Length: 296
Image (cartoon, rainbow, N blue to C red; front, side):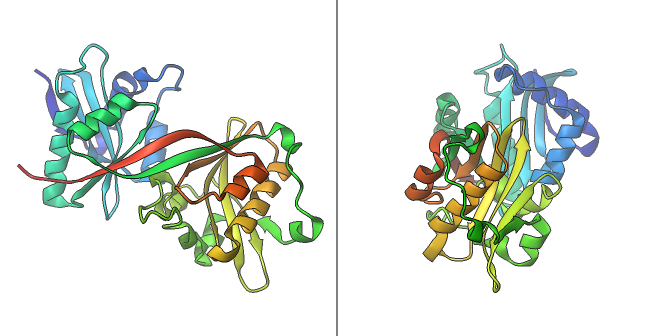
């Protein structure tokens, strides 16, 4: 009979093994998680060993849950079972245990972001009473060296320059993306201000600035030939589409790569005219589900 337990910082190597054997094994071709990678998620995404659990039979991982924790909620970032041990209630038990702990210690709210391409996982969470809150969508452009995108005129290009997370944060610009999806739901976990601060050494930035303020900005990370746009924002809604279009056109033509991906865009974050101008099309969708943590 497997034992279930929450983890401690010194359990990170075993947690990494459990993730590789119980979660990543279901995604062929995915590079294995490493201890350094786990610790990077601790810094970038507030992944907490104490909000993570393993089910183990002696020293063999059977199931795993990893939880990222902030003041308002705990996000279940991974949950999985060793092949051959499915449908034995392990994942349900892990989620129940996490909910009981958070009901006592807080925060009393749980969340998860599930790819639409995993309908079985969505059905599992729905069956446990988790409720839909928002949908995010990756927006992708095959850039082909920027040949298909009109360059930004020289006069406007002169207003676009590099910007760091720290500079944007100090100017209050990062707050402009909060709630920009028009649904009232928060941005996806890796796009929140806390994540941008935690990822500051990995993210590159570009901003369009007038003499008075930062009109708009984008933050991205180069990942194996793909420009993963992690976050973007504008000073106000009146010119949101125009400013975002200029910044993305600049990014495509000035830093060509094979793919441009806007990660987990909210419902109204990418105006249609911007998508047409840059050649963005919808790709993977993600369902954000939540529930209140409850003690038995």
